[in-house]
Length: 446
Image 1: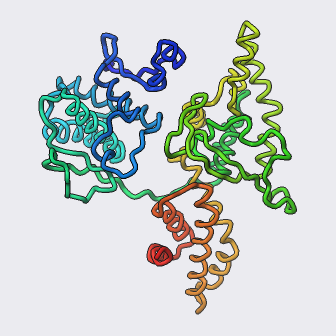
Image 2: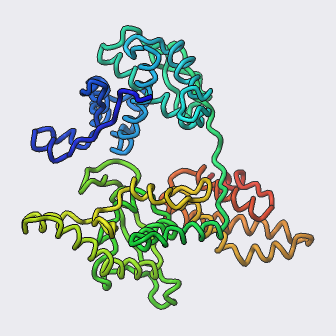
Image 3: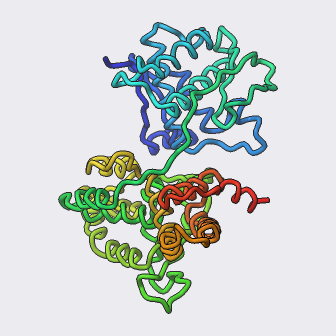
């Protein structure tokens, strides 16, 4: 069954020329007429520009507007809610948040009645969709478009057990579906190698796509950062490469780089379709930097030439050349690899179960941790029955914590303890030793 709602992104240049530059990158929602769904589109605009903020955001000391990717996610979640209302002959302006939203929309997602395959949706999916539905109803009330005042307010995951509320208009709270704690399970190395080989065998594009994957796996950058990687992120002049120790073997050298396009955090503007985020410092293996240099000189040049010569006039060709700021270009089309395109080829090579682009960060962190502790792991395996085992365990834990704080955290640009503790738990699982890492970690922080 086709539902009458669609997320539409208009060409930014067209909107800018028409005088709508502020909203040129913000998606809108169309309904069945087809025509603009005014309230849904206006909600996205005011949410994206920070004109309106939901209560749980406006109460924070630091109030930030959402990233464009977040707004796009809001749009897709919102049309899911609008479609559910359409199928059930309900109007968002007068539905009851308890009967219709909680015991209707939420219950249908949990049971699988409102899912593509008829299977129950994950807690995380249910939570984020409910958050967006609540926010939209809160916005409608703020705009005077709600005939029934909302009597519930959303609970974000971090406050799932908090029953207090200072909002005057809120009478009760409805808890989100519980999200299970993430547990790191990585595919076997042989399975990953086979998947990478399938990528590499893709005609014409395989070499470029494998380089993108290797960059993500060897540096732990996010998919948005890989897509936004510029042709000069690795300096064009090799003499400008910052290599902390040039005396070591090439296999041990690293190149230190700063990245800001597509990074997670506050939004400082946009450039060539990429969010400008906080500057982060990362290290990439020297041999990987050499591969990027060679790709930049050969394969990328050919792809760029194809893209430029597709334009008819010299002016258009120069503009296309100057606008091609991204490193990774599709050898078949000459177009950049967006995050969506990366995810598309990632899935197209049939990855192992659970192997997503974001898992590269876990893979990198766990690989570094496992490698750095090699000597101590060998000592523990030899001392299982000896009196020194307890001391070796404590030493292993201290070394692991040091590695995470000094090497892994800065590369991942993590700010929170809970994600880092996952890697200690993974290490404990791999070694088969119960380590009271949480207690020790907490003591270190005091």
